[in-house]
Length: 495
Image: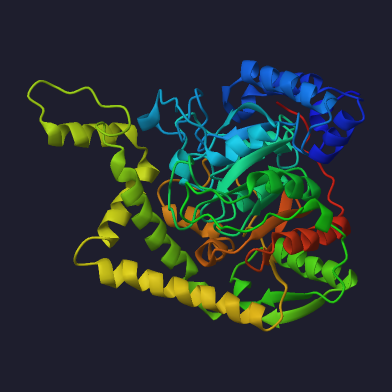
């Protein structure tokens, strides 16, 4: 079999079971692809020795007949997950040289299932960004190009390295994290599938925190079936994470029937934004038609507090980031700045944090510290928390009325060029999260499925939002949408 790195998880799993290929062969194919793709800057810490060692162990397990679905499958791990003995930097200078002595729960569960770690993937610093331009490693690059244009495009953020690596077939799948859209937006920009499960479905233990009440890990894969396979391995109760849910994890793959007859799909009128590109509008309408043709009932719904979601998110997330990042001070955690003679403890803190954090992280820490300060706590932070409760209630009301899933665009545009959204106006960049942040604020599961190409040949995604804890049902609806859309386009290889 040639081009082993181009296989999906399901195809590779079946080939391994049938003895057509070994995990070592799969892993070597991916390692070769990674070494030839430095132009994408997706993998930032390569771990070929660990990969080959795990692949050999996986081959033994498969031979012995004791192999879960993920056994022997080569994947990438986002740099936000702590991996024992391997640099885990959250793409920040302040964690330069940090090699944890422990493994995050999610990466440990994948390792226990026999998955093969190829290395760590690029991302926005501390997961703060929508374009992977805030990374200490430099920009990750989208493997897609506009027509015949050579301009480098963003793979989205913060899980940009994960999205780029999966789209370019450097790994069979990758882990991502999603605080305001950081799995779903990059998945849409690169033509892959990404699911953010219900808050509490995957353990956050050992994942560097950005905003603890919003962060959630999930898989980024080549299709919906792969997302179901990998999500099952990542989920489960973890006593080390107090927000982890004690719920049984179903066999998500077994729930993929593609039958959505009688399902109610809601179309929220508040997501029709002024100035939305006609291509996104058309894709959304086409998606609704596809689901209708598959037997679903399409209903108009209202989520009245949607317009407050972005402002509420950009109060709550920076507030939590300001608290979470206080520990990186050169004393408890993080590298310490070089001090001049006569510098005291205040100078040490100031220099360490000024050197260690990039501009976007500094901006969010300052915003967060401001909204938590004595005079402004009620005016901003408490008010944002109340708005969050109203947003959550909007969704609860819609689901109580019998809606099974909600269909929206995943992003307001296709991938944009690196450097096109300059630092001059960070709010422009924040608007990229307009369709995704409500899902995090309400703690719901959401999935992005590639559904078409824009006029310049770039992928566009549709988002489905599901009921809490019903990822299986959501994946099945996504599977029906994927089958109807028939998206098979791949980026042309230029790297």
